[in-house]
Image 1 (cartoon, chains in turn red, purple, blue):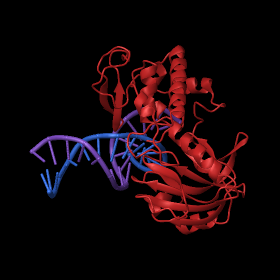
Image 2 (spheres, protein in one colour; image 1 turned 120 degrees about the horizontal axis):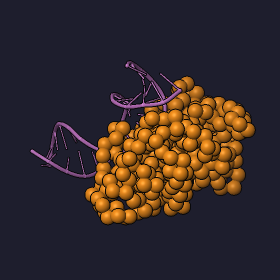
Image 3 (spheres, helix red, strand yellow; image 1 turned 135 degrees about the vertical axis):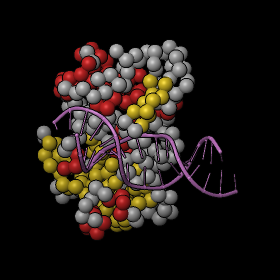
Image 4 (cartoon, helix red, strand yellow; image 1 turned 180 degrees about the vertical axis):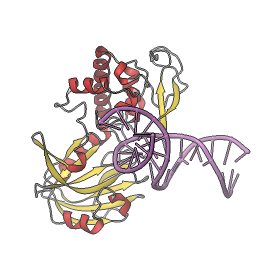
Length: 287
DNA sequence: GGGGGTTCCTGTACGC
DNA sequence: TGCGTACAGGAACCCC
């Protein structure tokens, strides 16, 4: 599932080929890939053709490629199974290919950016850019908080936000309006590393606990990024179709029944928020 | 505005 | 072999 590290790997992979490229063609094969673009496929194509990509940016799990008109950007959210692939222009269609964008780079020549998505939770759009504290971000990203790896992430504001929330800390970690980029996998991993029970009310966490949690969130995200992200199957791959290696480093997620790497107790899996939570019942005690 | 549940979707695994 | 069902989960949306 693409979370911050996976989306950042995709952004960094797209940047060298996309930035500076001229968009020569846009083909939409499945309009469900444009649920974020309410004006429809025809409008989507018209807003992209003959423009150039000027940069490659990201906040949380959203990535976007600003256009050279300085007023709009192609935004992408990968959802559960979205992929942005770089392919040769004549490459055969991917199995779940939804959108293909033909580009021409001044040095690398012709390429295709292919958006493929099995479960169709992901989508693309062309969105207006607005000012946000000195930077320009798409309107659809305005409500998304900065991510913990962002140099302008405000640790004190995060601590204050937790103090106002009576919800379980895991629910708050997954709330992209409080802190972005964290999904089910890295929430479980960070809570395991910080020895915090996922259902602990956020407001009950002491200041040292919040500091420890934030440090572990950053550590987990950075390690996953260094290993190219987490791949369980073909659902997440980089722009070249290659898997990441962080799945081998997981301590809690998907390890139910296996011994905790710290204390040997069986990792437990419980249903929480219509998804799974994995934790060690011994070293992540509920207080 | 916080809180929490529902919904969208498709491929895979599993039980019978 | 074949069928039905549970499961995976990001985020918008809804009602309380």
